[in-house]
Length: 168
Ligand SMILES: [Zn+2]
Image 1 (cartoon, rainbow, N blue to C red):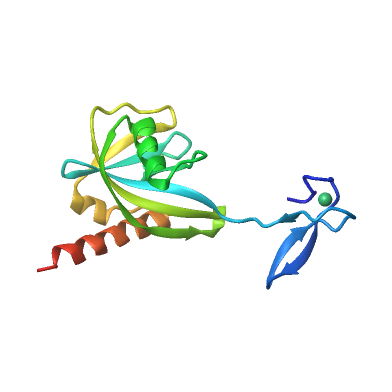
Image 2 (image 1 turned 90 degrees about the vertical axis):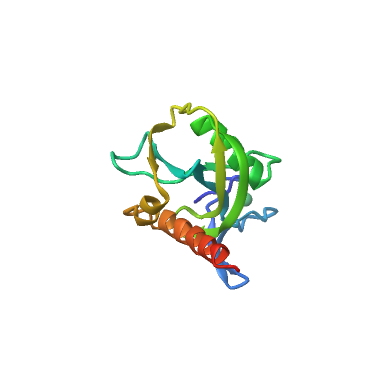
């Protein structure tokens, strides 16, 4: 953001609380572009004993990931990811479990990740080009390439699952 959305003056870099922000210094305007991260929900989708990875229509062939989406106004993250599951894949959410939150500074996003148990008939939105259904073993070995964060989410899920399975 280069110009003030309130008065159209050029924004100036200033230090506020130890971090540089673009601020408006024109008289009577106190606009600050805080540039706070945007929350994005992500869902690792389980269908029976398998996991469903999706390829966005804009991604190259063979590039798959978990499903993601922006939150709508007045939604909880749980409601958002359940809605995305329905919209993108047509599945109903039977249960969901928080995996963790992950920072994604490249896109200035906070990723809030869930594991979802899904049910129902597949019905792809136009946003999704295709899906890949993989076993649990294949999921943990899947090469997500440049999508490091997807690997991180799945590793985090695997660790919590292992911790859970090892509990006497
Ligand atoms: Zn201004």
